[in-house]
Image (cartoon, rainbow, N blue to C red; front, side):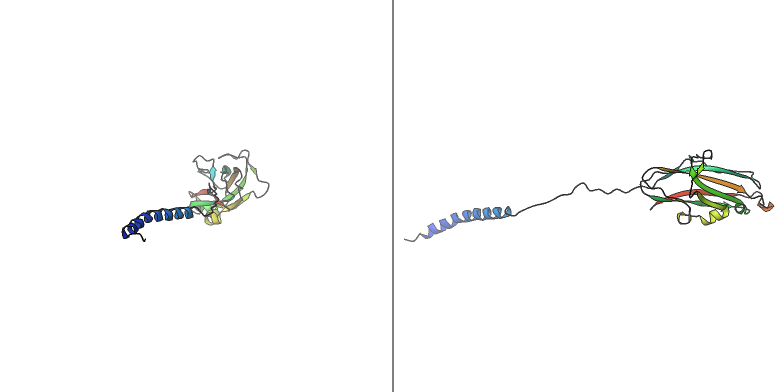
Length: 198
């Protein structure tokens, strides 16, 4: 004898929850049935090196000379320290040059690099055994040509592996043939050492 319509309807309502539970069980089982593997590499960082120069002038001017005359001569020294961590090239150039009455053409500079000197005094200065000559010529030629890193003078190349010091001796001479027209003349300029990494 077939079930009554009421029994069929009741059975249908009972089967829906069972079917839903079975479906959820299958979906849950499928969600956790795949293989998985991963590898990680953490703690990655980037850090750049440094190019650092300092000198021992304590904010003082290397030359402040007055009442010079034909034949006057002397020298001053300054020490420059490279303490950066990158290999670099150091060049010396002039800044803010100002010359009156043509005096710069009658004052010569001989710039030599070495070791052992401190600011102002060249006592203990020793020229490098090779590559010591940095510049030799007139103030006018120096300030006109060495105006930036690209045209600067010098051959110092710090390695960046440790602090390095170079002493620079700047010797000047006022030409004995300086004419009367240069009386009262001035020659002024700044000195800049610049390092760029290589």
